[in-house]
Image (tube, rainbow, N blue to C red):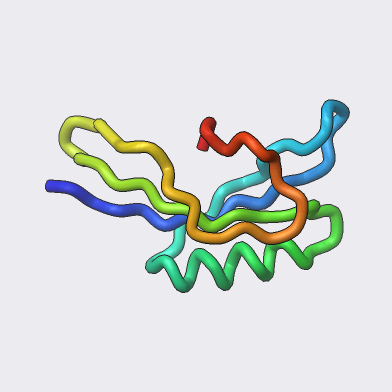
Length: 81
C-alpha cells in the first residue's frame, strides 16, 4: 500500500554554502508549505522547502521527492531529498 509523506525541510548556512537542517513531517501538503514558510523566517535559517515522497511502507521503496514549494535560499540541486 502506497503512503505519501509531506515534509518541511529548513536549510542553514554551512562552511560550503547551505546544508539541510532537521526535517519536520506534516499531515498534508498545505501544512508542509505553511511549516516551511514559518521555518524560513526563523533566525539562522537561510530558506526551506516543502516536499512530498510517495512509496510502499512494506517494501521501503519510495519514489523521488516532489517539490511543493520553496522559500528563501535553498540549494539548486534538490535531488538528494
